[in-house]
Length: 389
Image (cartoon, rainbow, N blue to C red; front, side, top):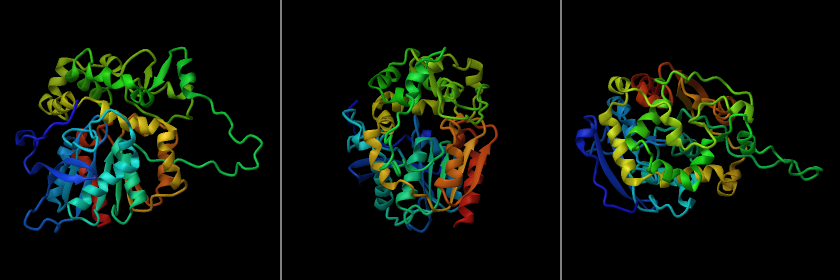
């Protein structure tokens, strides 16, 4: 899609009290961010909270909670992360390769932004969806900068493990079942969405969604929200095809379908769209405009790093390390994301995060918890921040 000279988001699409702007020189990026609680006369008088969005979202995804956090005394910053929205430079929209989108480089982006804004530390890093992975690695690698952590919708089960005590083993590398072959061999053949997103075809499928970008995103957001009646999640027993096939098709897709085809089956009727209050059409149009301009290729580079063991191998350097800052987890009670990796929620709570004192499942919310139930999420965040301020 190429580089372009980005302008701030139009004031009319943002709630009063939020402004759009840019910070240059952040790890090679010109980073677009939204701010609330800014005080240009005393720019560092307030503690800072950093909000990191997921896929397919933007800094705009935090619009419903930023003003309330600012009213409680915080300087709230939410960037378009690398590959998204109006952030450009540093291969931010370059489809040539996944290397710039490594998790360690995404953490460097976050630290670089905090530093560029003149903060030595932030009161909290808050991450949603794939942004939760970035937030978790921020807290694990630099607890001096990211003093508390809140993860939303995507549990962090810890760093990838190094093989242990295999030197004397007769079978040093026991073969694991191929989950993708097993999914494809089901009576209803399936495939996992993360590995689909890592393919070269996924971006083209979504850029040219046959129903149009607006209807594709409407169906995608609806399908993963509490509005879709089928979102009644429960824990899965194991990482096996027999268990994974219980997930909705936005996670474990029908083998021959694209993501636009998968979600088209659940496109909400016109009257439901008109009644939607958490994502009305004028707000959806912001996502449509941004992804219509950038396409999905750069954002999907994150998934290529996630699914390719060679690209994520460097993370094994932190095998057995834990997150030791105060932490909290928030998700919608109708969000399958908390169970898509069997056992991850318990591993996060009991092993990976040594000071996770709170896990909240918000009624009436699916995957987009901070948009579907902003008042409840804001109250939980403020209570957590107050306890650890």
